[in-house]
Structure formats: structure tokens, C-alpha cells
Length: 401
Image (cartoon, rainbow, N blue to C red; front, top):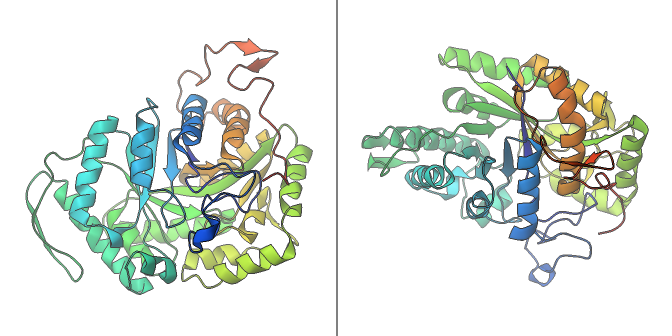
């Protein structure tokens, strides 16, 4: 089982700090704030193309594109970027409750043909009722997962190539089909830590994703989902969503993490924690429990830093250390059964180079990546460094926004 490395597309904006990086800095609620604050990199197609091309060159297999009212639409953005890349796959996040499953199946089939088979799907059931209501979705937490279960049954049925009928609580479909089924069928990624989410994963998905909890907690999740899948007569693979901050030495890495932390004032942290505490997501509550809103003891496991989660929802932990140390932690998760690593860092362009040129060779040397030519093979060197990053990847500097 090889390691599959994926990166992240910041379609809500990017920057050198953990806050104020979204193009719509307040989630688009207050319309007077639609202009990015100083220092934030807007998620225009030119900048996102830089990240996508860097990820492809550095050997990442795919890029995850988020979904929500705070970012650009994932389907449209990735389709545009598929035209300026050649091999890179796109892990497109979408919400089952706001689109017809037959239409989603059709969109996926079209994407596969236009991109020549480079689509992966990330199903986001939604853990925040406030945001779901913005989309017109008023179902409760457990009902949303029940609907996702039906949704995925319909999608897979429509992909069969024959007219598909379905009658459930949430969907009634008669003769659902696509002009042509996607080839290959897109792999389906899915995450959820609640008791309502587990059976949905066991019955329907290819890859179960967890946020970056300590290894012992990740192992418990893997054992839970694996047991549920076995009772369904299925097998499920596993992935993890993490940030990374790797440098040539541990001292450099932790100094950068501390600069990111120093940039967070107490009021910002308190406001973020209050907002995140209202989330219905069990996974989000598990993320919050890792640090309890405190700056103390943020290294919750060797090289696993919970500082990101002080102000960011969703994935709230980062692997911090030397390139070898970050590779150690990836190898540790891999030994538990984690195959897919969906990674990110601030800013996403620079951190892609730090990881791709620092950690990826470590993983390759340990035999954890598929054998093949280096993604930078044939690129002439300049001053001892690949021409892909003349002078080396920039340092991540806190303060400038």
C-alpha cells in the first residue's frame, strides 16, 4: 500500500497568516467586506493555477477543492484548472443536499470525459445548520446523513449504464441515467465522526477521511469504520487531512509555527472558538477538544500541532518539524492503514514546495511512494537548487497580510 499525496486549493483566498485569508473575509455575510484585506491573495484563476501547476510538478496526485458559501464553486474552478494541467486530479468537494443526485452523476461523468479521467469526489454532508440553511437545506444533522446515504446509492445506480429507479425517504428517481457513465468511475471520499456518519461510509464510499487527530485516535476511527464495512461485505480505504510545516531543521519549523501563533490576538482566538463551538459536527468538536481553546501544550502528539485549530474550522492540526520528522509521522499514520494524505499549508504555494522538495524525497527513499521518475527529473539545477524554486522556497513570514 503506497502513500497517495494530495494538496489543497485555497479557493477562499490564501495568505501568510492563519486568519483573514478568505476573499470574503466574513464568509460573505456583510457585503461591505467583499474586498480582500491587505496581503491576502485573492483566489483568482491565475493564482490557483500557480498552485495547481506546482502541485502537479512536485508530484502530488490531486488537489482538494473545498465547498461552502465562503469560497468559489469547486466544480467550475477545477474544470477551469483542468485545462491548464495535464496529470493532476481534482478532489471536488460538494454537498449532497443542494444538488440532485442524478445531476451530480451527470456532472461527474462530463467532468471525467473533459478532464480525461481526473475527477475524485469528496462528499460533504455538512455539520453547520446555519450554513446549510443558506443553501436552503433545513434538515437536522442525522437526517442529512440519511439523505447522503440515499444520494450515494442513486449516484452509483445512475452510473451503472442502465435506467435506474429508486424510492427512498429523500429521493424518488424513475429511470435515472447519464448519456455515458464516467470512465473510470470517480473514487468517492467522505468524512464524518458521528454515529450517523459511520454506516454511510461503510455502505457507500471508497475512502474514509479523518481530520488530523493523534495516531491512537485515528486508529480507533479506522477500526470502527473497518468493522462497519466488513459487516456490509465491503472494504474501505483511509485518508487523513492535515496541514504541514516542514523545514530543513526542527528549529526553523517550530520558529515558523510560533510566528503564526504570535500573529493571533486573544480576541481573534476567542471569537473563532465561540463560533466553532456552535458546530453540530462531531469531528469539529473533536478538533476543539485537542486544544481546548488554549495556547498551552499545542503539540498534542509528537510533531502534531493544534495551533491551526485555534482559528480555523475543519482540519485544525499540522505536522511540524524537519522534513525527516514529518516523514516519520506520515509513516506512522501509514502503518495504521492511512493511504491518502490530503495536505495544505500557509501560503499554499510556498508550502507545496517546502513539502514537495523536502518531505517527498524522504518518503520516496523509504519506499512509501510508487516507483517512478522524480517529478522534477530533468529540471536543471540553479545554485544547487531545482530551477522550480530558484533560491529555495520562501520562508513563511507572519504579520504581512
